[in-house]
Structure formats: structure tokens, C-alpha cells
Amino acid sequence: MLKKTLVGSLIFLLYSPLSAYDLRSNMLQLGAELAEVQRSFIASDQQGVEDSIKRFAEHSQALLGDKDIFAKMLPAGKKRKAHEAEMSAKIISHNVQIILDAIDNKHNQSGIVRREEAQRAYTYIEHACFRCHNLLRDEYK
Ligand code: HEC
Image (cartoon, rainbow, N blue to C red; front, side, top):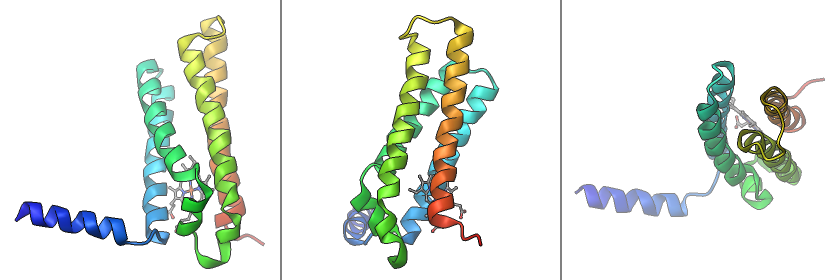
């Protein structure tokens, strides 16, 4: 019985087209994962930063890294702006790398400098979210 339900939902997932629903639920997850990174920075929890930024990095690249996948989730009138997703994915992965390098002390810097660099990179990641929302989501006059 359980098996049947499982197979059924897998088939459903395979054939259901990506839609606005997927975009919203993926975005909610991305928001929750980024909030976890912020929480770890605020708590000065270095291990927490490393774990949460890795989780966030994987999911953000999967969601934003391929403009064709992203286009399928956008409403009809906005599909041509899907390239913004790839641009955001690049900004995000660049700044995730800065945070990971700071944790690994790749450039042999003091703890104070590494903390500063990592925290600044985090704010640039948030800026990538705002940037795309400004361009693609929020309708202001
Ligand atoms: C390439 C464009 C793009 C990028 C980059 C982007 N978003 Fe979004 N986001 C959207 C769009 C479009 C929606 C509207 C989806 C909907 O409601 O159908 C959205 C919706 C959301 C929502 C849902 C809000 C609600 O309506 O409840 C959250 C949360 C969110 N984004 C968080 C983030 C976070 C955090 C980041 C950065 C890590 C981010 N987004 C980056 C385009 C983007």
C-alpha cells in the first residue's frame, strides 16, 4: 500500500510541470536556509555557519543555476527575464566561496579580517536576493 502511494507520487513528480507553486515553495525554503546562515553569524557559531552555508549553496545553485529550469517556474510574461537567475547564482556562489575560504583560512589572514570578509559576503548574498526581487517580483511605480 505504502509502496504504491510512493510510486504514484514519484510518477506525479516526474510528470507535473514546474510552476509558480514550485517557485514559491523553493523560495520559501531558500529563505529559511538563508535565515539559518544569518542566525549562525549572529550567534557566532562558526560550525553552524559552515553547515548552513553549504546547505544553502547547494539548494540555491539547484534553483537558480539553470535559466531554463527557472524559466519554467516563472509566469508567462516574465520568462524572458530568467537569465537574472543565472546572474544571481553566480553572485551567490562567488560569495559562498568567500565565506568557505574565510573558514578554511585559505588566504592566511587574521580571525578578525576573516570574520569581516565572511560577514560582508553574507550581506552580498542577501543583496542578490533583493536585486532579483526588485527586477522580477516586486511591482513598484
Ligand atoms: C532570479 C530571481 C530571484 C532570486 C535570485 C531570488 N528570488 Fe526569491 N522570489 C523570486 C520570485 C519571482 C518570487 C515570487 C514567487 C511567487 O510568489 O510565486 C520570489 C519569492 C520569494 C519568497 C516568497 C515570499 C512570499 O511570497 O511568501 C521568498 C521567501 C524568497 N523569494 C526568498 C529569496 C531569498 C532568500 C533569495 C536569495 C537567497 C531569493 N529569494 C532570491 C525571484 C527570485
